[in-house]
Amino acid sequence: MYVVQVTYTAPLPDIDPLRPAHGAWLTEAIAAKILLMAGRQVPLTGGVYLVADMPRAQLDQLLATDPYLVRGVAEHTVTEFTPLLVAEGLESLRG
Image 1 (tube, helix red, strand yellow):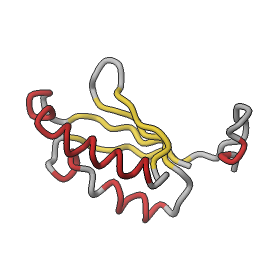
Image 2 (tube, rainbow, N blue to C red):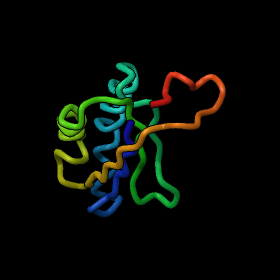
Image 3 (cartoon, helix red, strand yellow):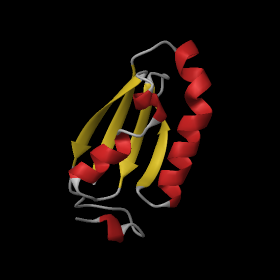
């Protein structure tokens, strides 16, 4: 499983026009259960994704299609981890 931190590398006025395409990209990945959740950082300097377990190369291919990355307005930092303790109902996420 992965946590992906998205950091904006451009000012918000450059980010805002890309939000609809980025939102559609997120919606598609969540519908496919590739991304488990996504949200904005507070304060708004980027976002965070929780990503299902998959080969790292597959994740890198997916992230390369993020409209923010394609347009050069954000970068991703990926942290892989193995969930050991999980809340009731989320046992399927345990490594």
